[in-house]
Image (cartoon, rainbow, N blue to C red; front, side, top):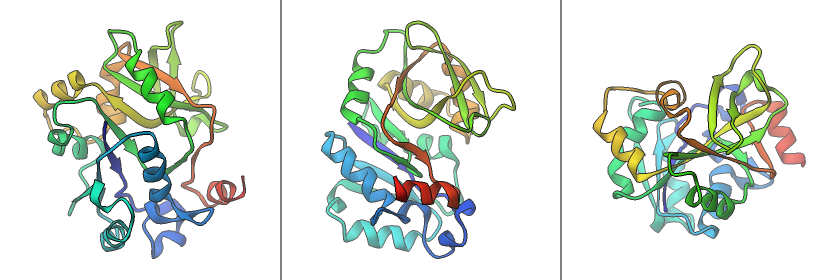
Amino acid sequence: MRAILLAAGFGTRLRPLTNSIPKCLVPVKGKPLLEIWLERLVKAGVGPFLINTHYLPEQVKAYIESSPYRDQVSLFHEHDLLGTAGTLIANLDFFQGEDGLLIHADNYCLADFPAFVQTHLNRPPECLMTMMTFRTDDPAACGIVELNGCGIMVGFHEKAASPPGNLANGAVYILSSELIDMIGKERNGVKDFSTEIMPNLVGKTCVYETAEVFMDIGTPKMYDRANSI
């Protein structure tokens, strides 16, 4: 199963660390974040990969060229950031008509990817996508998901002041080939996946909750925590 890893962000909340290194390459327990993603995904049988670049792209290119994953990775440079949905839309052909992963690769994630893929394969027939979720201590800063008894998303609240729960969207998705085809037919200039595509998938998204480590390491406090657990 192919995967697009979104890794082009500035990591502004992690400054000054990200003044000289892109967020996707900051080390967690001695390993670049991107390496953690690639290592775990490859072990789960996922690949090949497309990774977008923008901020300090030469560092990402140099890392990939010297990594064990260089033959499995294509880089897609964005002179101007396209947004999470924009990058997906620009690269829909990468999936070659099959189901595929869309991953925000700026989180620290130790989830069980084989179990995640199996959940997708066993999803209810009405579901076009499978979303990874986790429990958060700061629900107002996340996209919070509401479920029905079948594990299908029936409500989504993006950074709401008083969200109904703490089950958060991990921004790791398996898109069905049907959904990829639908997005391809409706290319209408959307940029953000969470705010412009997700609302159309309420009632059509299967939810997988990981019990393993899943952390937004976008702040110095959370970055330090990731390195200490």
